Length: 229
Image 1 (tube, helix red, strand yellow):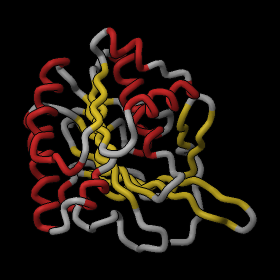
Image 2: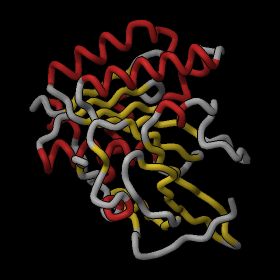
Image 3: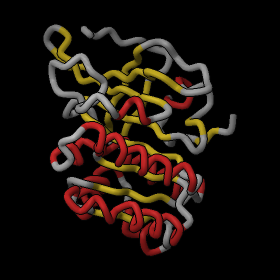
């Protein structure tokens, strides 16, 4: 199985070598887990270190806000945009009928290999029917696979919920699932990551801690985290 490097220190060891190429990876977790940082780091490192162009499609945060936050970690996306290595798209969920064509055009324009969609949960505010929501997610996934992109698809877990995503359909469309936790353990909060499933590949079965520092996210593959699930 061909893989790509995630660009997140320690994560590829949990994935037994990296993210399976051309897969749709659902990245899910509650607020404060660093999902947007994860997406930014995935795209930045891919473009900067391995010359793999990327597209960031946001349904919520304006592109300028995402890029400004990324500068806190030393990631200047403006330079990569000028070189045609990164493209940011901010799209209103209620105009979803147009987004597939525009996303395809953008991917082809820069020959993108990596895509981050942040977040698919926003679509559910406008698409109330779960069957229709699943169809839209499936159409996006089919397009990105056809274009040869390896995609991070962000969703959210409602606090207190036992599900993997906000609407309970996202994990059935994705090839693989990565869960981020931000839980209270006695007197402090800890962050932890779990590879819930990885289609066609073995992976770590344990829950591992991760940190968000000045250089972004770092996973600690040799350590185990203990959280209340």
